[in-house]
Length: 396
Figure 1 (tube, rainbow, N blue to C red):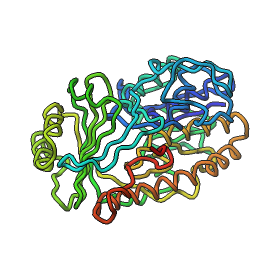
Figure 2: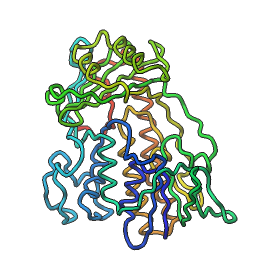
Figure 3: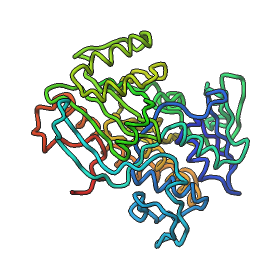
Figure 4: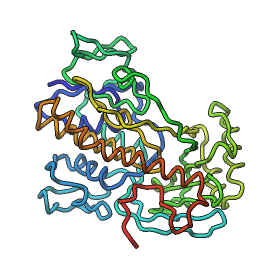
């Protein structure tokens, strides 16, 4: 069976990794030309890390092995008690462990200080390179921006790309992100719901701060309005940072110059600690951008005939949960497992039933966290929920 994956990001590459056996021929089609990955960095929790460990081990774990059996906080090479397989050491995985979350006010007042279970900060480029390295040469074809499907009667038989290439196959998987062309081709235009919050993101090079705050997700948030700055060390000398803000406070057009974006960030952060200014001064704003957050309601299905969607193409939540990348990897693993055990209509339906409830909960949580962000004074400090998937925390 030939499976044509449209989208060479994390979702598509993860799915390809799990489908590499004698039963499937897999082709991944990426719109970029010669580039491996993009974007900045993200947090990944234990559900995603268990998928990453499995790929790193080069062995397929049994479907019954869940994230709880994998201790991502101490990933030394060991034999897993449930599977009997050797698991990789932390050094074999991209990114760095994040073991605590600290929320402060801009004046330094500590609001929350909580330990985290099994979170890791990973640069998107590093993860994409890691996933590429696990695939046979020639699996990924670049310069293929999806244009349309080709039909034989009611059945889709090929994907056509803007460069004139055509890829025939038996099944087609849309893994082409939140603005998925595959989703639009089959479900029509998506009704996006504005998230009411904007975010500037970047990666700053500052080895002193990266070492000082290693393993810590630090966030400063004003107590009376929607304005915050967060940072997480992502490597030995770099920190990924973000500035979340309510555009009703102030705003700048995303198409404005790099210098205007930099000046805007400094102006918004004028009342924040000196270290925030230091991070901004260490940032190359050429690689920074403004992200208009948005989501859409959960689809009535993640598949249509012989086409299925995974990752942001299937479901998009606001970024406050830090669950997007993990959800994409869990989607890929679950769909691959189903395709190996069932015929594809049953595999697609089971995949939807398994995933739709959880991603709907993440959608709801993202909106709730957004509302708290916009009106922080509505809750006492001790009740403020941290911007991560709640059930991945352990009590102090």
